[in-house]
Image (cartoon, rainbow, N blue to C red):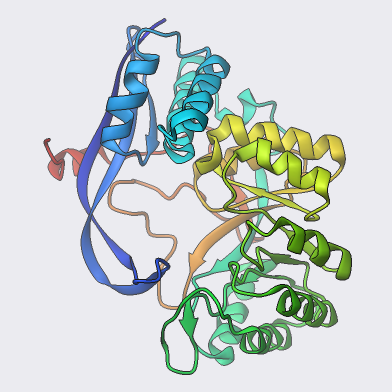
Length: 381
């Protein structure tokens, strides 16, 4: 079996989020955007797909690297891509991750089984937490939203409060300084609204100093929050070591440190956090699976960051003690999350009435693309 082509299919779609000059996205009017799907083809007519992919990188860097290779040798290809990203930063860890996911989808299509079973298979559903869109409004908005999520069956809820946003002027703001007191007001309102039987978390996205993070951590302990995620800029590893020693609440990080499993292994040795954090944009399914197994060996949790089919499969391949939750979102009032984006026939993370996301039993990643829509809106380059 040989790889015969690597192609990025681009198409017109729409989005509601857009970045500000500070880099962090905010909610806005629906605007036209460009979507993409990476396709890896073989001489046996069995293909693999994954949402996303930069055309120049996939077709100009990854394609020459893996063309003619056996797509079932994912580990070899993963190491080649990792070496290239380390040496020249091309491909990026994100593009590397998309290609790796497409190769796992290809293997599942060949074997006729879903990816989570290829990885070993531990369960067919995973508990979800409702993960909010940031900057929803005042504490009362978050409180009502949390109650609505609880009524839908969610057993856990994560607050993204004021991120690169000034809640007093209601305008975009730099990452630092943050608004720790205002964030805690939101957290208090949510706890009061949902009661004591809902698991709660806070993700401030690196907007605190060490002193602020310690104060927020202690306030969250009083509110019985489960974890504090990514509270400071993650290049300050010593600050994270000190924070982890100072507070009892679990610190969940790093989220955006480059280096994938390798840099996170160092965080474990340094005692810089209590829970690990990773997603497919730091080495794909293969990179995430390496870290999940490392965390299992050390007896700590690896909580996957972000949404999408690969993360559902990864969580369902791991025991609950290692990967407890799936992050479902980003949610906001008035938006129907159960409605798929135009290029998909169905959402990739359907949820039941008990707040569990159900993994697809279709071969590969089980993503159901609407090829009629994609072809009708395809961009030829």
